[in-house]
Image 1 (cartoon, rainbow, N blue to C red):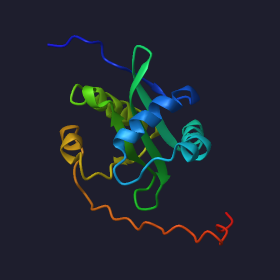
Image 2: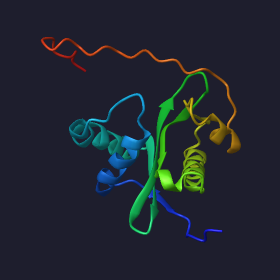
Image 3: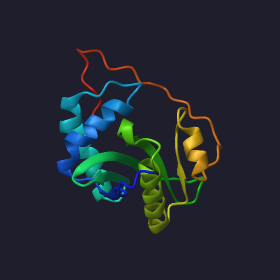
Length: 160
């Protein structure tokens, strides 16, 4: 039996950008990650959301190597009477899958949700439902999406 030490789970920092991008490229099946947009927009936004307690962004580390990450967004709701934490991304290095790293990341997200008094954690998934069921999640809904078409090149994006 492999006696490798368990990974350390910690909040992600700006120094994790390269490792998280590497893992993201293995995770993404619907979208192709754009490195420039990732570095200038999405990674900084996710770090900021986590710093403001609007999200949880954790990494799993073996020694000094980041081998997994979890990203969950905290959403205020009316229906649940509090915040819901939606686990949007969970990625683990391919050779380490099935050895507990993903489970440790999910348990860390669950602990943070309890501490933040989130009402529940939801997970939109189609490929990993069995994994989440083994961790105590139950199926309650179907997740649908509407992919917004990009604006025409000559049209500026609406102001926010």
